[in-house]
Image (cartoon, rainbow, N blue to C red; front, side, top):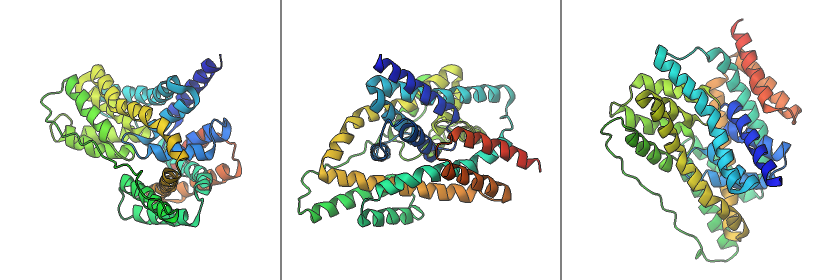
Length: 374
């Protein structure tokens, strides 16, 4: 009965997140921490940080993979499948509806006034979540220096995987020298390079292989996806520039993973079957990668040398989220209205720790809409 109730709880939580998690991977991470660490005590902050750091080391959409990790921790292999599927499903359904409307009417509904207030509210949510994670990850002066270094470099060379692996390897070597150990146990990391294939036609088989490949080699946040789409689909004539831009817009103003833009694209190319095939293909590698990686996280933590690697990856992950938050702030907090929404959001999230992040998002959306009427 306990296992069954755990699965139901996992399904309920990640369906809710799937419908309410706006704002991209950093915001999704903040909301997941609020739910599984603060409210439900499924994990400690350290365990959450370890999973967050591990997620950032593998290809695929980060927030989706974090959801899959969390499901595995709480409900085993069933939990892994349920958490990932429930987090993805709402976004895919909403995106599918937009795809159908777009196909019918040639344009997207006007939702900008409501999105206007969501963006600054999301920054408040991210800051409230990253503060305790940052405190947890700052275990030494050396790690603080690495965090500052990663944050500074993120504004110059925004390559998430290089910064995280670099931080991890640097601190692991430092620990090894400090402990007077050798580096015998360091394993080389190789990346699977899948050559680009020419797209002959818009068949479902082509869509499957295109999006399977993208899902298997996509590093960083889901926003990197759009560079791949430009190469694989627009340059080959399967998708127009206007359709690509509208697909990006759908991914940004719908909840859940931004990678659900693939559903929109698949529908435009080959209807419902194209949407289903494309969505399945792009998310499939995430489930496989997490299934392989999840058992290794505890092994890494139990090894002193690899534990130092994980500590550095964790602080690097926090630094990168701070960097993303700063960039988002520059882009979204642009006038007195957005400043007011962000300030109210920060006061609420820091002043009332137990407040549900969904209310912050809904409140920001409504306030944004009302302020645009002034």
